[in-house]
Length: 291
Ligand code: G1P
Image (cartoon, rainbow, N blue to C red; front, side, top):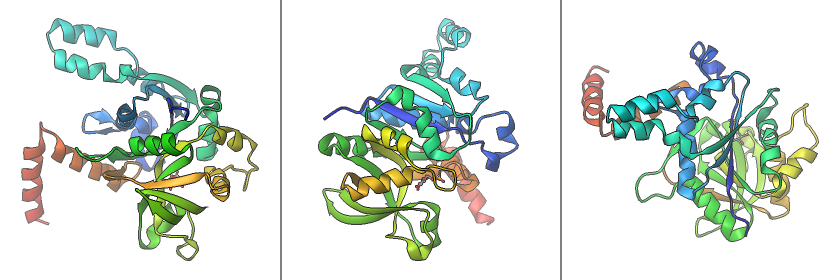
């Protein structure tokens, strides 16, 4: 089976929900504690040894490129001052071999993926949506690792899924689920953001996928609906050919494209931080007394 060596991270959203900060700071650079969200997402790839990353950005996102590049003066200074730990932190992002590609027209997720086509061609690739952070605790398998393992075992495209309830089914791509063996679920239908009545199940697509080499070609040939092309249409075609699997992820998901999700991520990461967890816990306990 062909190994998965490349990843695509669509991160070109304008971040209008986060105005005014997103006027000058691209949304992927919003930080959870001290690290931009895009770096957390790239770091998920370390669990599978993928270092070739294509980040699809909106025009004017040079600061993201800067973040993944060298900071010579700063690194030099930290070394001279003997601050080796901070030096290591400053150069963490340099381990990735990142290609930046601009999505010039805001034509959705499939449009963003197609921007990466010249770099991916007909190879399989991991797809990680920029608005979601997935955190695996020790002992849990990182979501992307699980998907790569399933792909390399079966050769089939695989999506990460989670259970959602009530009106939430309409917020996500929805998965018709069939048999499950060893946590690998067969998929018998896909609909994008259905009404509650049209949902196939309680299983939602979350923003992690491993897609086989034929997916780019299929996206290219897809007929637009309402002037847009949809990844979900390709996934649905794969389903009909029995070429799509799903897997439930282990861990915690944070929707950092949403204000509450963003705050939640900051609070929970603070509670996991060796540096400030005790202070944060104490503060939250005090605060809760007055709520
Ligand atoms: C996209 C996908 C959707 C998926 C969601 C996960 O939607 O189209 O199928 O459930 O990501 O976050 P978006 O949130 O970009 O509208």
